[in-house]
Amino acid sequence: MSGARRAHGLATLFAVLTLLAIASLVLLAASRQLVLAHANAQNQHRYHQALDYAEQGLLSGRQALENGLPLPIDARFTLRRQDLPGQRLRLLSTGHYDGHNVTVRQDFRPTGGGESRDALTLVGNLDLSGAIRLISERPVDMTVDGSVTLGGSVDGIATLQSTGDIVINGPQTIDALYANGDIELGNGRYRTVKAQGNLTLRGDAAIDGLARINGKAGFFSSPGIDPAVAQAEVKGDVDIAMGGARFGKLDTEGKVDIRQVGALGALRAEGHLSVQGWGAPISATVANAASYNAGNPDIRVAVQPGLKLNLQPVPRLEVKRPRLDAYDYRGQAHYVFTHAADGGVRVAVRKIHGLADGEYRLGLHPDSRLPNYLCRATDAGGVCLPPATLICKGHSPQNDCLSGSRPGLWKLDGVTFAPGVLWFDGDLEAGSGAYRNTFIASGNIATRGQHVSYAVNYAGAAGICRNSDFPDLHPDDDCRDDLFQGRPVGNAALLAGGYVNGHFRGGDITLGAATQVFGNVWAGNMLFSGGSTTIHGYISALAQAGAQGVRPHQWSASTTIDLRGLPDSFRPDRAPDGDSGGRARLIPLRYSWMDSGS
Image (cartoon, rainbow, N blue to C red; front, side, top):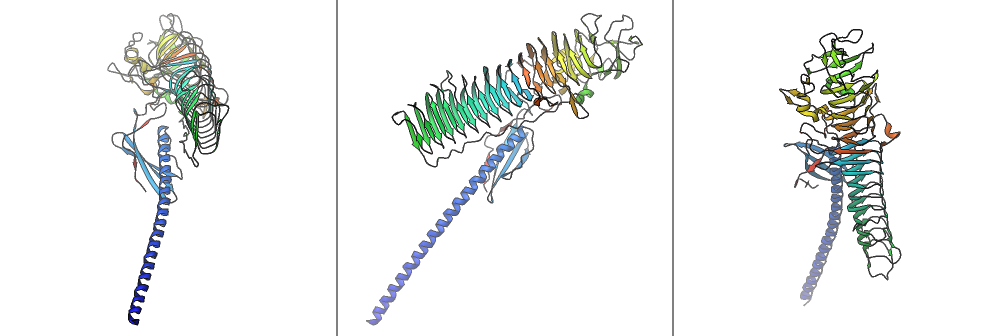
């Protein structure tokens, strides 16, 4: 019996020990599961944070490439670019967080070999009290490297971009606004509004698409449009006093104060919600407490502690500043005008059919004594020694096309000029006449009278190679076998300003009343419009003399930019040096985005 009891006791002890061992294993497994779960959670957090940084890098890299800038260097991500066959490129971005690395990539197709949609490119502040009307068969943009104040009207611009503030009071038809500073709208209807600063809506301003704001937002407009604001994402506080106007959807990481609104369809806010008075129909979800009239059954508020929206911020607009220098194109001109020490006019001729390259004088015909003739030399009275070639037609045969010119200032007035690129040393006043020329001046350019000018590329074969006024004179580098082959410089109708000993001089272009320009207008400094002006091309004014800190571009007159029916030989999107006049565009290729993991 004692042996049986002993055996039973040992069996019991063994069972207890077995149960204790099993329990220890279960506890150990559970502990390991907890440790693994915690580790997995930490890894998931690291992965998602690194992925977020990688996506930020992809966005920053794309924006840099579109603006012609080097890939940014940032501790949060590393960027690499690969050029692929078929004019494609691949951007790889590796995000880094707490020892975790995640790489994403996307393939892009550059649009049109660097075509620019910026029909107007301005450096410096713009103060517009007149009107700009843009007529185009495709969307075009306006970029201002400075602040913009629009008291007049802008019609036909797809996107207005500003590195400063945008203030609009006049009637506008602009599809989208983008500013590094604040945006204040007192009028107009917009599809997209994005600002790194604050947004204020007043008067009749309405947004029928999306407003995305990094700062605060004040909605005080009450237009006759429903909804007055379709959707807004605001990282700062929001103030709403819109009378009976209706608001569509609002997301904000700040607090919301509602004084008046017709209705607010959907609201999410991380901060406090305050609704004054009786209130209007509102559906809201807030992270913190809300104060409102609980007696209004149309106000429905749900409190969701810990609500985090993580709204996408508006990235900073980076603008590549073009550089313009008239001296870069002196060697590309067909006729270079300078004043000789004796007061005569010297003309350097290059690649003109019918004239040998070299230096000429402008003088009187040896027999008729009529002006506007080129010859190798003149006598003391300015009469050409034979042979002599007519290069300009005045209002009458007796009228000198350059009458009144003096060193530093050229006055051109007449009927027309021999076709080609003309380069002037100093300022140029281009008066009445119809010209098939690209005008370049190292100083300023001003038009007056009934001035009409066609850029060389705009005039094309009919105006350059088969010019009826000068059938024996045409540029050999543009006309080959009677076919027109234009050069990038020929896209400019007017180009002004140049660097002398490192300092920019001139560069102002002033367009007089009734001026018509068929080609691009490139002002190295400022552009002024003094009358009813029509431009069939792009406009750039680059403030290279530093005038952006002294005075704004002031346009008080009516300017029409008509881009319809442009000839194939004319490329307004190209600068005189052949480069794009604005930002490149990168189109993401479908299904090319890829997350390679850690």
